[in-house]
Structures are given as structure tokens and as C-alpha cells.
Image (cartoon, rainbow, N blue to C red; front, side, top):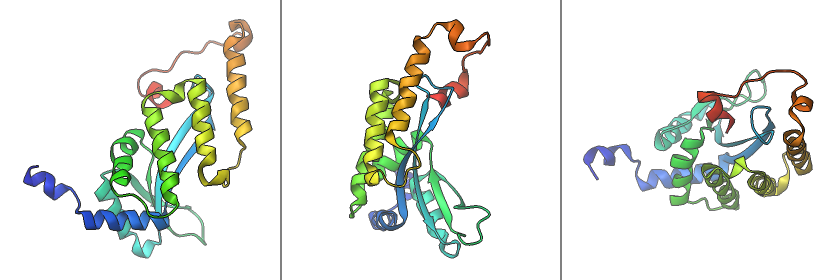
Length: 196
């Protein structure tokens, strides 16, 4: 390893501190949203975030530098009660290449480690394109809903499974029934990559 690489890489003590901090203040989450731009009608949104009071937000900058990715923002903009800041990583490439390997090397010590392992499994499955198939999406939904016992979710698993069933019905319907005379073009470039 060159001297430049050694300077860029944080030392193990700092990395262990970060893992401990995330164990207390971080979260690994997989959200879903309906999307008319995806084949299955659902978009998978994995994200890592860690929050802190604004007086100690420098620790978020430290984590951001150690991971080499993410952005820092107000956790609940406009709230008078919650003034906390949050480091967010949503970019799938950053999650797969930076966040997951970091926490595989420096594991969490609490039960949050199981949540991370499920999160990592989902991110890796998405890297293989499994979220683009109905069976793969069902597996990802089931895994994500098992995280944190499925609590903290606005919608039920069945709501999303119903979206998959209705998207299957739409794809099987004749084109005249599907579009009712509307002409739509496919996604191109960045929009296509985002839809995946």
C-alpha cells in the first residue's frame, strides 16, 4: 500500500469508534415506494443514516470522511423540536462499495448487527439485479419487513405484494387496455438507471 493510501484510510481505532457510534445513533433502512417508472411498480430505496445534535455534528463529518460518501442535512427541516443533523447515504454504489464493506470489517456489537446483515444482503441482491424480478422483489420485501420486527412501517407487506400482483396484471393486459390511447416513451440514460 502506498503512503498516499495509508493517509486516506482511517486507522482501526477511529473505525471502531465509528462502528460504536453508529451502533447507538445509526440506522440501516430499506424503504419502498410505488413507481410507474419501474417494471414491477415498486422502487427499493436502501439507506444508511446516522444522526447527532448540531452541537456535535462534527462527528457526522468525521464519519462522512471515513466512509468517503454521503451528505449531511437537517434531520427534520422546519421542526422546532428536532434540530438534529443526519448523515445520509442512499447512493447504491456507495452503499455497496463503501458502507457495507466498512461495517463488515468493523461489525456492530448490539442486535443492530442483524439489521445490518439483512441490509447488506438486500444491497448485494440489488447489485445482482434481483430487485428487477418478481421473485427477487418478494424476497427483498420479506427481508426488509423482518428488519426491526416490521415495526416503524406505514404500510403492510401485503400492500406492496398487492402492487406486484397488480403490475403483473397490467403487463399481461392488452396494450389498448393498459394505455387507453396514451403514448409513453421509455426511460433513457440516467432516468433508466434510477428506475432500476
